[in-house]
Image (cartoon, rainbow, N blue to C red):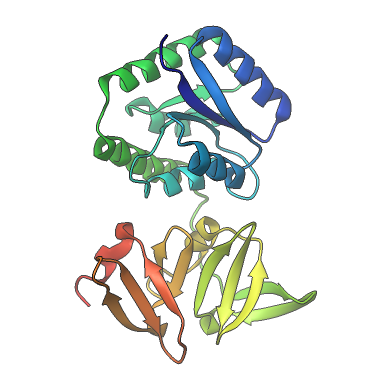
Length: 262
């Protein structure tokens, strides 16, 4: 008996999700759909729980979109193969063409899905190395961001409307110590006081001055002049100590190069 391939499907449209599952089970008898997510946050939960071989990932989803999920997977030691499901125009699809990671255009056609399945099966059987897969995923993410990001703004974000205890606060961005993702929200820390906004870390990164704010983890952006020191523990983990607070923030391996010259 052949070993089944574990798959997670992520799409916020229930009918499309069900249709893709049915099509997959038709063209790929050995597939085992272990999770069907309705948003990016749920997709990551399923990925962490089931360690699927392949993820069929819709790009436009609430809370965390497909691009943010793909960026998160770049930090995984053994990421799954990704097949993006997209309705994007050709200018963005070009970013997929030369990658080992595949894509499907909505509405999904069975003939195209068969080609995708054959390609994924070939990659799985060849047992491509995880570093190669991670590099492809990371490179694809950067190309997609470039292809789909909005036109540059003349000015960076100056003010943030944030909530706390059912109250709305207007916060000067210059007063922010750091932003950190917290479930469906992003937490804004100002002198150890916490506020919440619904803007994602990825969206914030594009609106903040990169000379003032640095992304140090998939879920964290810190104001550079709030950094007191950078420390490394005996296991090689890198942390940031902030000024005037006992708080400490983890720097992921992806962003540790920011501090090599400090």
